Length: 329
Image 1 (cartoon, rainbow, N blue to C red):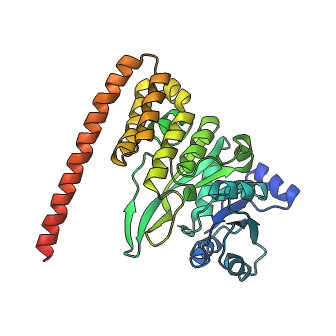
Image 2: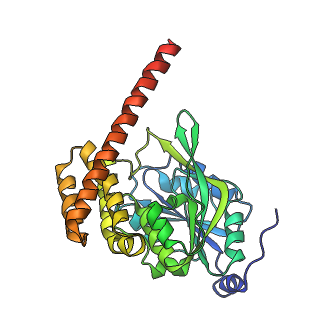
């Protein structure tokens, strides 16, 4: 398939810096056994003006050897002490030369048209600064796939992204290099929900484009450890995220939306029996709400409803499992 025509700005970028159009940043920690699946999916792209930057976050396996075996000028290996995936991504940004920067986790993959379709979307509107694509979740080792449902958000949609509570995961986003510098890169203090954070901050300052095609696969393998897989860690980082965006959430969506977001976090803390988390949620809401008494009353009602709904779903799931087990036997 023919590559889309490049804008004059992109052509000047390539000409002046002798740089690739795309930088693909892959943070990795002890992924020597599976990262070839990820890197191969980049080298299989129909649009080939890219560099791959693998940032090794202090691995103890032979990750460097795996990268060196590609023997390609398009792949660059950077080693850093073990500080986390976000510092690794920021390290990759600092060392990248592309006009656009794409992110790809070390156990995920792209379809062959990923970069080509993303470039088409950027070229369709010079105001677009962030492009996202749809993905599927693939559970290993079974191989079952699930399509993540989300709204087709495009344009200046900061309010809509905030209200939805997310945009897409990191392996599905590409942004202009200049804008990543403007927002200060990835938040090194977050160890989960970091993709929500970077998408929120970019959506606030730029127009978003969506490629309404499944072009990325998000792998979930219980045999491997994902940094953001801990339920308790995700609960706390969700709390930190909404602390960070509380002012904007109230300003753009209203107080009730902040309460709704904290309900979900509170429910997680409750199910995990984390009393400290519960206390922090309550104190935070009382501090932030203009009318704490009515706001907390709404919070309690919503929490009771959410807990009832969760318990009901859990009971139904158990009944279904037992029924199916009985049928199969």
